[in-house]
Image (tube, rainbow, N blue to C red; front, top):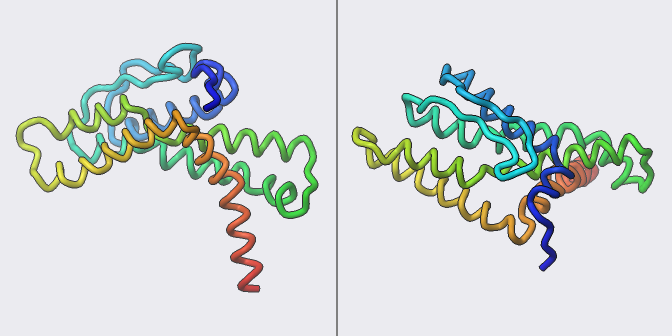
Length: 180
């Protein structure tokens, strides 16, 4: 197994860290959850964070926690898509194409929520007054976040980023070609 320290990965993929934290902040703003402090990027652990008031509703906690998964995945795919086509399909790309692929991969690979996001989400459903149905729905989400976070040891975040930024455009072109 090849090991690279987290701060070096964060430095190499800093746009993804920034978009991840912006996504948390965006969902806080959408749900009117006061944000107390934001650090979009730093060399350290964690590489970025958003500290906010506790949400009043469980669905708010859910979306604030998984917001980066949605935003980073969509942005990574959209940014890399026009560059991945000439590079993957035609084997020719210029410097801008490779830059956009790096940007898309770095953003998409930070889509996976952190264990801190999972802890925050689980705390929101542990309290009194939360129905068993809500806990039943949220528990697998928390479990998946923990599994994905563990998968980072095996480069799951990079595999996901490449899949979104390069694999998805390749798959869509193949499907379109088969239909046309």
